Structures are given as structure tokens and as C-alpha cells.
Length: 330
Image (cartoon, rainbow, N blue to C red):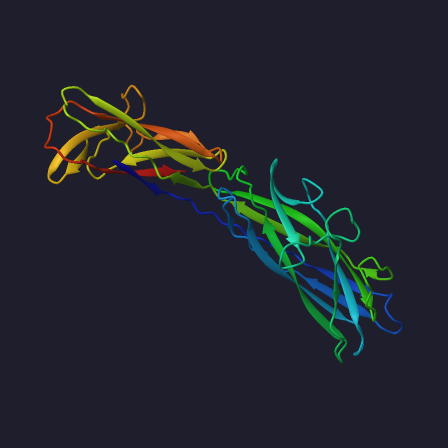
């Protein structure tokens, strides 16, 4: 007899927001020039995060830079800095929900190998990102777009999602240093003008998840007499998010109660039952009171299905089968 899995799921939302800031006019540009820089953030949309599968989740955001330098033909450079926010180590940023931390990183390259850091805090990340702006137009304006590459790091199955999804967030402070008519070698070259700070607010919702491993067959073997009950058992495995309550129901179209199910061989029937306990006193069905309850650990949990062939008339010889559906509620 085969037991086939079925699933129920809960969907959650998340919104990720990057908030930009203004760079006020500076007074340390070339003589006779003025500068007015604006930093404009975008949206870093991770969407719903399923950490149970252990995979990373990537997304991007665009930060816009616009500087007006008071005349064409000039050049400019801007260094964007991003602090560590709340971090759990010297290498990883994190989004926070209470005492739980979801490791998340921000990078300046598409391969996600160069951490987007801060020149003012060189112990974290790779330092600030130096942006060489295009040559200033005749109206004195130069603009550029910078991509921030975000990633929720893999192998975080133990992060709890709550029963309807958990919002993880953090606020990262950024500053920008600007140079007028100069292209410094690095963000630490000196001589630039530091603008006001702006924030990068990131959040993500960790959604509750469950999965069922394809169960083993409940096999009663070869039956030559039904003058006494015949018992058998098998197992199925459930993996649910850490700390997530769940219930498991069993059902078959062959019967409305767990003790009145039927295997079939053509038109011939063989009655059987499935139970929650080894004493075979509590049927395992798919209505309230017949479910088996548990709490997820982010690891596979084995559940035993206890089967019984009750006393009945022995039907004609043949291979009798039925299919039971497994439904996980969470």
C-alpha cells in the first residue's frame, strides 16, 4: 500500500525599502564652483524567504547619484559607504527579529564576492565603493546609477518563521564622500567632502514551510487467513520550520473513517485500519481529533503509521492496494 503526500501552505509578504538622503551643498570644491549632490535609494525586494530549503535568495537595488557642480566639463567622484548595522560576526550583516538573526549580506559586485563596506570602518567589509561620475554636462549636472547586490545567506534552516511569517529587519547607515574635478585612487584618498548620512532599511519575511518525504509502503505481506488480526507498520517523514506547530492527517477515498478503509483487487475489497499508536486504539484520520500534532525542528521528523487487518472473511487471492494521502496543516 502506498501513502502519497499532499500539502497545505501559508503565504506571507515582505517589503524591503531603501531610503535615500540628500547631500547638501559643499564648499570645498574647485574655486568658483558649487555642488549639490542627491543620493536616491531604490527598493531591495527579497520577497518571501523560505529558509527550510537551505538555499540563498538574491536581489538587487539601484542607488541613484546626481551632482550639480556649477559648470560643464568638470568631473566628479563619489564614495558610497555602508556600515555593518547589527552584525553577528566580522563578516556578515544580519536582519533581526527579537533575538533571532537572519544573516544577510550586501555586495558591490554581481558575483557577490566584494562586500559593500565603509571607508570609515575598514574592519568591516571591503571599504566604500568609489563611483567615478560621467563628465559634467553643460548645465553642470552629472548622474550615475549604482547597483547594490543583496543576498540572504544559505543554510539557515533553524531561523524560526512564526505561525504566519516573521518580519526580520535592520537599518544600515550610509555616508557619501564627494570630490569635485578630481578622480581619487580610493575612497581613502582624502580631500573630499563628506555629505550627510542616509539609511538603508532592509526587511524580509521568513515564511512557515513544511514538506513530506515520500513515505514507505504499509505492507501486510502474504495473508493466508484472517481468523486473527494482522498488524503492520510503516513510517513517514515530515520536515517543518523551526518552532512551527503542525498537524498531520491521513485520508483515503476508500473510506470515511480511519478504521474502515479498504484495499481493492478488481471488484474485491479488503478492510484495513490505520492508527496513531502501537496499541491501535486511536485512529489516524483527517478530521480534528484524529490528527497527529508536532512542532517543527527544521529537520526531518519520523512518524509511525500503525496498520491492522481486522477479523473478516478472506477475499479471493490477489494483490490488494489503496492510496492514502498525507496532509500537513500549519
